[in-house]
Length: 500
Image (tube, rainbow, N blue to C red; front, side):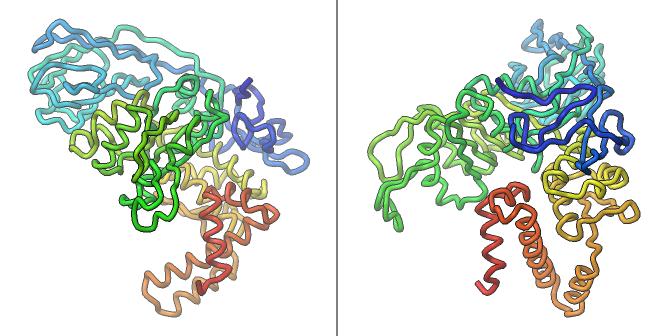
């Protein structure tokens, strides 16, 4: 039976994820507690043994308000047709247009293939024009983005729709505070957890969308681990990390002699993922010629190695992720709509960290403890400072900021919080760090050379520090650093032998 993080007056939040029984925990029985950055619900304190603790109290909003809407065509080719926007749905957006993949499809040739999106929010029905050819008008006013309340008239192309609010409601938010290793206590995340579990219980292909660093790969792995394929392999392929000339061989494999350098036959990632899940990251960057080959593999559930003659059946669930707007890519002709249809049996959009109220403090506390930070150094003032950032790099950037602060001094005081910026960093305080920076500056080198020297020194110190923290265990150190074991080993080797 799957363990879950539950919302209660006092609770335990496992750092390794909801399913981790061996990971150490942020214990909620804090003897002393203080509110973090003035946000109700999230509490920080210390046990008698100095262990960092977190409380997420029941004052966190338990109810999500919303409404459902109906759009009725009052003029145009589809006059009399009605479309429902169910505010109970966990799915983020519905697409309106005349394209075959649209949720709300019109037969008006003056309406773009993907004309606009509709999203039920607590404040109303969000309407966003996707750069359509003929635009959108609400009550006669041209709009790009509008928050509708019901009663408005919406015109797109030659179609006129009447917007009506049909039902207002309040929904009890789930009590879970994480799904696998994906953590979040904000309503923006908690409302998605039931959808994640439904997808884990199914075998649908999934497309995860969102800005860089929002946790798309973490979610993909959590869905895999919570589903029927959990005992099978979870194989990761990043479309941006492999030269385009090698992507086909990476995905489908090759036979011996298929091309120069193919000295032996090799299985592709589809074969390696047989019986499990293949996670394709940055699918929006895949070239069109390769999209056609991927489509056939997905459609037929079989692949043929480069240079091979036989087709090999594969049983693989595909979860894809992208930072790009795939609907815009389809409209621009850079992504195949039939491939999107096959991969997007379900689509999820992860919210950016700046839209997840209160989660910065929770995640900072989790990461800080996970990386072995001193509990008394994660002050409420520092948390408040972190909350002021827009975090363009999202959760990944937050983790790296905390890792830097530990590696370059391990102390943070209220008197010297990190600077306010779109990408905050914690200023190194030890004298030796300042002396190193001053030495680099005094050399009068170019910007590129100086930056590389600073980066090399940071990597060297960070690797040494985090290995010491984890008793020399490379796997644990790489996991705590938030990078792959192989990349961690590359950095370590580079600074063991700096001359190459």
